Length: 243
Image 1 (cartoon, rainbow, N blue to C red):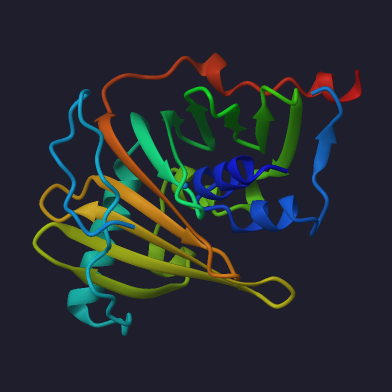
Image 2 (cartoon, rainbow, N blue to C red):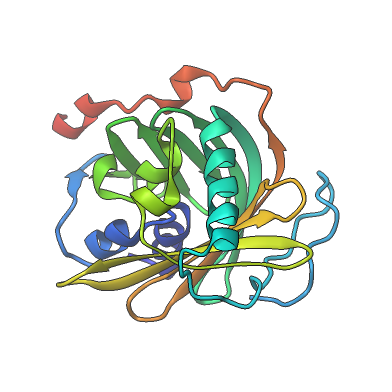
């Protein structure tokens, strides 16, 4: 697996601690044989200017205080209010490589990430499985959605305190950040930092850190919550696995 493809798996699957582990061989995914931080603040989010991934506010350990809980509840309410979301993204992989693309979300359980060439990756979740397709290699890897943290963002309703392990939350004049950890005995600890606008609570970026300390950051922009994606975009053709 190339470093670009591995970075794509890590960044888009958000999130993607179990998928990264699977890509490294624990466990082996189901396979269809045919089948990338800077400190500057982001510029205005327009079609012509892409945001620059930024460092989150200084981390403050989550202690369940009223003020911290209010921030997390605000983020949970925002995520729960989303039923559809379309936007563009910029991804910075562990090696500093940069890739771009477009994503589509339709709750419950459906998402599509389309990378712009030369990155050959598409990622689709249909509510049950997550498929990672490599257009160059003509491969399709499948992972249960229930075993990836994608399930948190694609659920109809989410309470981050109840449904995840929140370890830090902080806010400055620009951003709210929420840090989530997933600990697995055999694999290690993955950390996910979600960042939202301090004024509008819109999703701005996320960073996932794997047990080896490798970071992948994805910044999103041009967000649209008014248009409903074509349901066919989230279809996975399982029959190709057996041809």
